[in-house]
Length: 67
Image (cartoon, rainbow, N blue to C red):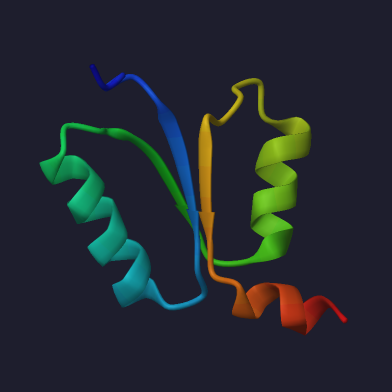
């Protein structure tokens, strides 16, 4: 049984990709989704937000930009 109350964060600089992933999750019944466009936004939500995320989907190319 899947938990439809999972909190999901999508991290991708491309808006169309974030939107596509969010819609895919919505079709599966997941609605607690936070789409963000950068690692800085992700860090801010993780550090200062009062909610935890169960799943983080991140574009691997963002990691290369940090180096």
